[in-house]
Image (spheres, rainbow, N blue to C red):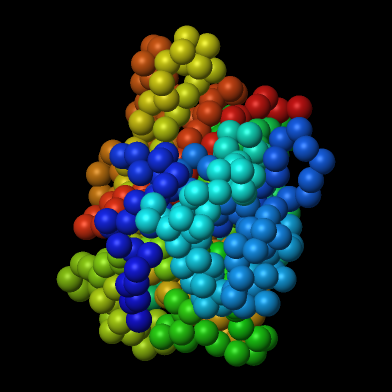
Length: 441
């Protein structure tokens, strides 16, 4: 059920001035969680909340008595170096913390605002910190939930039968590699693999020449479920802690050779980047909207994946963008180029349906597990979420402002993912998920 509360009030202002600037990803209505450490200081990783261009240091807030009255289990979870323990406590813990942080940061609240010394200590500038992987991700499942993306890729591979018969009955997915998930800002090395250079010829082991990005949204699991128990479609939102941006780097030439009969493997497992801030489900409540309207004639949703509430507000009005800066562009001081802009509202399957399907056989999801949406693509060329689609398998190269062109990514290219919500409420953002592609080693 949707829950709108005082933290969503679009009139709220913070005494942290940068949070009130137009276009800020982290106004007081957002308050996403992450893990950071101060540069040039010998300190462990710490849990924080982003506010404008600063980070609220939650362990230091505990030490300073600013979180008096917060549940002791939550206080204990804040002493950890990842969000997993906090996530395991369910929505009540994060809701209580967001409410307390919103009060501390409210322009009309003096407790922290008027203590300049304490405020300077518990609110370091984000630019003076290092951001780390916010979650210890035990398992990672990647879905294929955009019918537009699935149709585009299917059209390239199977023009007479783009969507396989099961696609409109269940959210298709595969189990990815959690060990190679990295925080945004980490460089990505071009992978080696087996490539079929000529049809019918023996493959060769060499560096991929068709490196791609995939624009995705990640869902982080909170409390989870026990082995053998299902999370029903009605319960699914209670299992979700929050969301991040995901770049599922993909080697298309390796993928083409290996993906049949068992699906993606080495073409995907070399790296996946996620944004450092986890936007809670609570912060996204004002931006929920009806699930994607399925075309006339599509099969009915099976009962275990259907609920009236999920159909009424299971979608999220989240705008997603891909930007590219080649090494030549950066050397010349040029701004990144917008490659595509799409909407998470265009996903054929909702996140709740992905969670319910994932556990429908009794599979247990654990705190910190990540579910990725699959490439988010829309009905227009400008909304395609991968270079494979944008350049249509290399036949329609993308032109850059330097005169360069791209069929796939080149060494030195920096891919930047951005996401934000702004419909009918105060705009909130996801920050950025960046990665520069380095040459094969």
